[in-house]
Length: 343
Image (cartoon, rainbow, N blue to C red; front, side, top):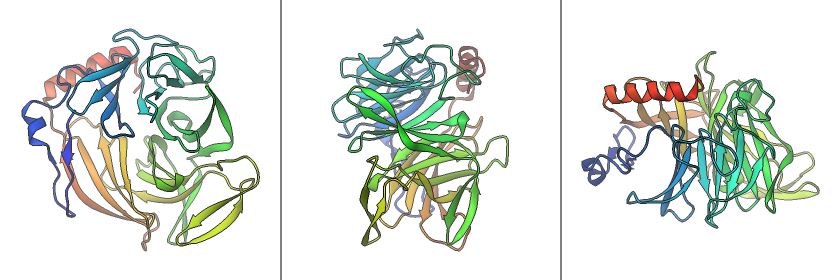
């Protein structure tokens, strides 16, 4: 696990923290196939999922493991995990986990590691692509604690799904589904069809979410979309802020929708996303690639308005993620045996 100093100017190259580079990064040798990474609300810890070891780990900034959800090397249901894809820590110390490749669920665990809730309620081990499960690879999640909303990047169903946490139970949100194949996004007054599978989702200020999609097997287009969440309340009107003006809209008619989209040129095999949103509707995004060679952490500046059909994008420097190729190849071979082809 490495940290990088962000480039301060467009075109500049970000560099790894020299102290962490010198010792090979945090958790060196402890991770078999790290997959999802997030920072806790207090900024003091990371949550990392390891799909090969079937665990989610809470780690300090100096590399100490403070908590482990699941049992290393053993897949299972209930308090155990099966190839978890992403974990998000909550402000109360609990954690939400996309138990994504073979348990096909979203789960909420307490500080003590006990299972508090899961959706679907009776999700079981072995539910894979094409089987009867509401999720087909929940690949990423984002949490809006103020609204008690959990957004799920339901990858193989090509949609985002919102759940609400009511007490210790999950519940589906009315109109809380956003298909991402065939939807339309508007940018600079031009509408363009969205096509892609969601790989990652992040919440930003104001209650909106950023979604990373990849139209693999099709056009190959990689894009980031800013989407609105479904209404916080089931009835009545809610006050929303549009630029510096306020207006009211009916929560009965407001649904999750794509606000704007940006195509990201030159990205290959994207898998994860980090976002620093701006008040004008744009953002700086980091996209992690997982291609076989020359994998990079790519940085883009997204403009809220442009003459292009999918929003303005400028490249703002990449981070090379060079690794020992023989070690990488052996890890991928081991992972292929574990995952039975689920990637």
